[in-house]
Length: 196
Length: 168
Image 1 (tube, each protein chain N blue to C red):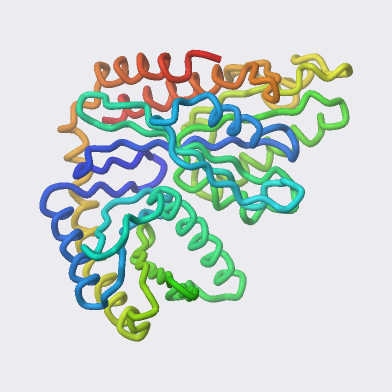
Image 2 (image 1 turned 135 degrees about the vertical axis):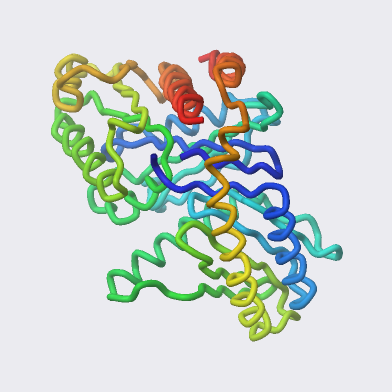
């Protein structure tokens, strides 16, 4: 749930980018960082290995501005995608308010997409959470791959019922990066308004 | 409902700030922060003599991540938790004490501040903060209702979202 700090009159939300290894989660955050004006963002923190694989998380605070007297901020996180890092990946989900699932369009990553989505559900369940109560949007990344799988095929393995908003993206070129972020943020705000 | 989020306001916030300030006075440390386990700063104090602190959000996020990893390690080893984390560098040290399931106390100090004292006062402060947080948590639900975070809030926020995230 969002953290409300009355003394500073701040409302903070935590958005987590989830998905299989190398699907482009960090690339999303880097693009957001590069496009947000200086006075609206904090420092980006990346805990990565030498070969730039996320080891623990990336973090980027974004300042939405003041709404009804409350400074409203979004903290964006990525998880490490590699299967191996599940212990640390699970920790990042703590207190999550919204999720962007970044899927990979490469044919040989179809299974990794499915496994990552299953892993997401399992890890949420350990916190007593489910996708019923956390807003989730899907980003199908790397649409520029020459052998990119059809979107429907990828959706079939991560969202067979077609219930989540879906965005196609080429995150490395900055295409389709802000749309899913805006959509998940909007849904998170809706949930806050519904709760209070 | 996801996670009991802590909201500090009014008297509870003032009390927490006073405890942090006293911690700094009693130990000679630079900065003291009350951070929730999601990595948000709930309250912080700086010693008057201390230079401006580094980015507080980054500190809070990394400390919360570190504390989460430390707790997971403790559980792997069959411990409920490890009481404290202490890092000592040449110029500065970092002391982290778990307050409860939702919050963490962080103290940043110079080598001139005695570590033994930091630990003793840290545990004392953590106990006092725990009490305040428990009382605050009880009031949170009622306070939230009074906020008026209604459709108007949502619509204004959504407009700002379009401004900030709208371009692509």
